[in-house]
Image (cartoon, rainbow, N blue to C red; front, side, top):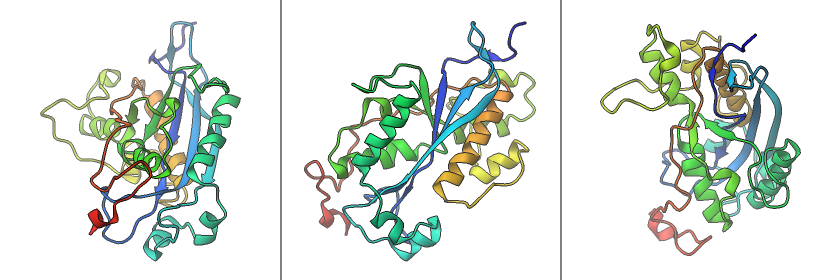
Length: 260
């Protein structure tokens, strides 16, 4: 009996929702440093030989707090927003060490070669909006003066884009034909995680909003539901590892006079 579902090009999904340093009034242009790295790994339960599937499940999780190095002291606003306290980052590994820890996690699950980091399976990064990899990871690699690993360089599935478009086309009969890219002239309302859960009738947010691992688990719930509704899951957001901000000097150097 053939598995129900659309053809799904990826074997696994890495759902990521980082938390980063911030203060009241800061924007995405600020040199935010990642302070929590939480990932849910999803795999298919029912993928057929023809690549059809509709049932995803969480098979493992990775979580580490991260020690900021440019501005090690968290603002009270950041702690209030994320729930992360100073002691949790003071005793956490730095970002380069977290990347090595996470690479071991990927290798243990057969996703990358443990020797050279090359992908061994097709996996796709997923996030709520484009910000996590496009902005925070690229900035953090610069601040930490480390190259962006090859397993992080692929384009990303922006889950918010998909759900926001789906919600705007809620009564489309052929839901599996919804593309994960916006039509050029189509205006839709961008939905946050709580609103996405509500739109998909998945119930309330579970946990604490802006806790990285809780955000990640709720995004994973959404991705699982999109698969169940037979929506093709694939990247829709390009990532430029060489993107620059005006405060970037030499690799690892933050030009503080540009922040005034």
